[in-house]
Length: 275
Image (tube, one colour):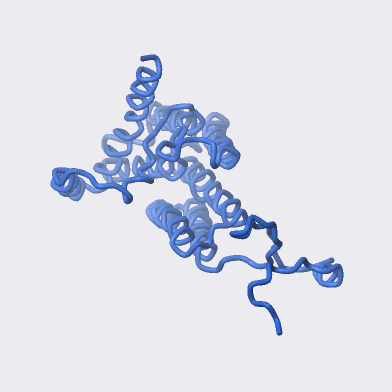
């Protein structure tokens, strides 16, 4: 009679040979509750499916930017950000976290929040600057790649309460909210003026540098596991009411405030350490 409590057996050489050559399979090493290492094949469906939807949204944004459909490109990145926030929570909720999922999520983030916003900004505003505009957008994309690579190697090392540098989804939201605001106020953001184009180039480079900075930003990962004063809820309601008056402007203002809050958080942390 088979012992159902027996640890998962090791993969035989015959089974391994079945996956040699051209295959479509993933094999990961995991730790059991008993502390043993086992090899498992396959992936968790739901979190990786959500990550794939985020990847699709980023890809669609790039195509829309190339076709001049900038509003659709912006909304696609917003949708990618929603999916990006959902896949991790789903994985943690159903116990489906895996190294494959972490790496796949980072690759999806690079496309959706590193490449797509850069192509959007270049197609919308910076193409007239030529190589300068191209360089500014590449700096943003490279910084997103650096930030994601650094995040991967620091998993389990840094304090989960904070992000080191602006998270790539927030960086993308800052860029696309700027695009939306500029499209709503064309008289203020006249893209035919070289000065406006240079400002946009400076903005995308600055946002990129914030991603690879050592500035601490509160991650809000522990908010759902702790109580907060009741007064916080009415404050949030007033903030949401103000944002709905002009959603693009509201999102841009909140993004800028959050970006600046990192300097305050870092200063207070250093002051506390020095004390």
